Length: 157
Image (cartoon, rainbow, N blue to C red; front, top):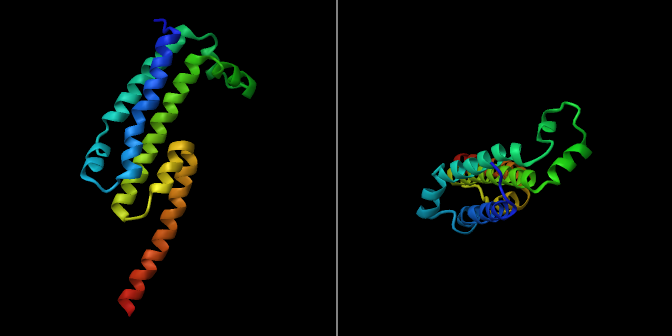
C-alpha cells in the first residue's frame, strides 16, 4: 500500500494535534475529575499505536532501504539517510509522541498518588521527553526526602 505525501502530512499533523489535549489536561488542570478520567484510559495509546502500526507496515512498500534498520553494522550516517525520508520520519515521530505521552501519563499518575509537583516535569516531557523523566525522578526524590523528614519531625515533636 502506497501512502501519498498529502496523506502522510495529514497523519503527521493529526498525530501532533491529537496529543495536545492530553498534555494540556495534565499540565493545566491535573487535579480535576475530567483529567483523571481521560488519563485513566489507554485508548489514546491504542490510537497512537494503531497509527504507528499503519505507518510502520506501509513504510516497507514506501521507503527504499528500510531493511537496513536490521543491519547490525548500521552507521549513524546510514540511519540519518533513512530518516531523511518523510515516511520514516513520520513513523519515528509517532513513536516519540506515543512514548513521550506514555511516560508523561506515568509521571502524572505518580504525582496524583504521592502529591509530588509534576507540572514542570510534564512540560519538559512534552518538549524533551527524557529530560521530563529526569526532572520528575529528581523532583520525586527530593519530595520523598523532605516529606519523610517532615513526617518524622511531626511524629517526634
